Length: 561
Ligand code: PEP
Ligand code: MG
Image (cartoon, rainbow, N blue to C red; front, side, top):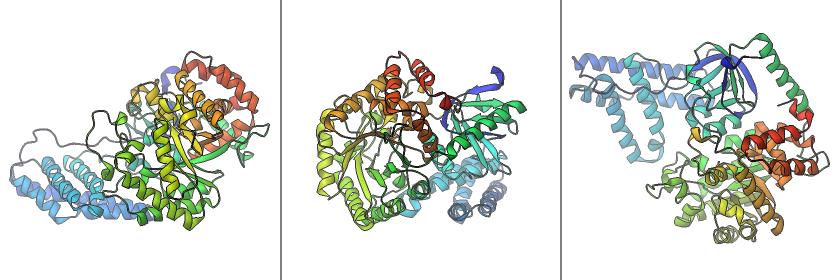
């Protein structure tokens, strides 16, 4: 066993374990404040040119080592670094008396404004332009480039936090695990890591004090990082990984308890690539397609045909398996440029989700029309649900619009406490519902889900959240509406048992979590899950609730935890 001092604790957000060397991600470098003017602007321009050139060469070299799409992105970014007008603009700033790093930042800012004004393809390159700028600033200052460095061997990435775009392009073969000091259990980095099957620990205590090259063991289930673990410790971790792998090899097919009660096990997806990957796995369909993820970088509203093409490509791989599509959940932590209603004091409590659809009904209608076209073209089992529903009127308004477009099934997310408490009314005219435990925790505990330091409050084991879930399920039982869960709680092995005990009939999660949840269900009966749920609801604290569930769970499952 490792001693306390060598163990760093955080929150495990993506299951699995790994052992390997630490690679630290350098934070973005800014030009020093008040950087002095270049003594010789022409000489400084030569240095800035060399900095851009080294960025371009570095990107090209990386492109040579990755596959198709990632390579194309890197080559296109290298072209930006070689852009003559960017260099010219930096030269102008140098002659006006700015220092080299400041001149690069100023030139990049001007181009950002121009690219944004051009819109379309150019506006989508703004993030790449900023990346080139940050790399060139680092090069001219002679410090390491920002972002995830090139990996020569399988490594453990340690960062303050990672941008979703960075997480999305990490090479799975070289990234053994991710450890961050920031982030939270429902941050999009956590969601993407789980989606890609990379073990991850966020909110890790003193993570940034880890030393590059040191060997650590990461446990994405327990949320621990162990420094320079002993051979015996690594052997234990490996043995547990193997025990799990062997237990999982027999866990296939539809989800059910050991007395035959069916619980559909579904995947959460965010784009076409996720859909193709999830469809190849043993899942019963999709319980949450976050459509806003597809359009995060779009600067103008996607047309019916553009959307229909995306939806066809998402639906086709699933054949006749169900696909629950959530209409745009824009706003707050997921702003969309084309669906922006202007600044708000409290975006999480503002016009987001379905409220934005009410303010811009043409966006909802375009999306429903595109979904209807894609459903007809593919013959898929499509079910459409609305995010952020608070009242029965909102639910009815949405269901009417869905049906007017000829779409067969309308549902709502239950992620606002009001909807959970009044679910028998909210669900009266709905075909299904899905509980979003990420936002339900945020709103029940009045704790911003983006604020990692509030993780204890954002814990879905909080008794108040469990009471709201129970209330939602009671309402669903009265109206005969099937209720699922698609927040991160669905992929927590023990909590999944509690949710089933409370009456949930489907669980949707990152595909990498499905096999373990299937196994957990197969070790328990429905009455067993109900007993665990009843005992857990007596707990006074989140920690007690988790402890009670651990004690009551089957010993076979505890061995795998
Ligand atoms: C949720 O809130 O639990 C949910 C599933 O939706 P999102 O995380 O996309 O807000
Ligand atoms: Mg939500």
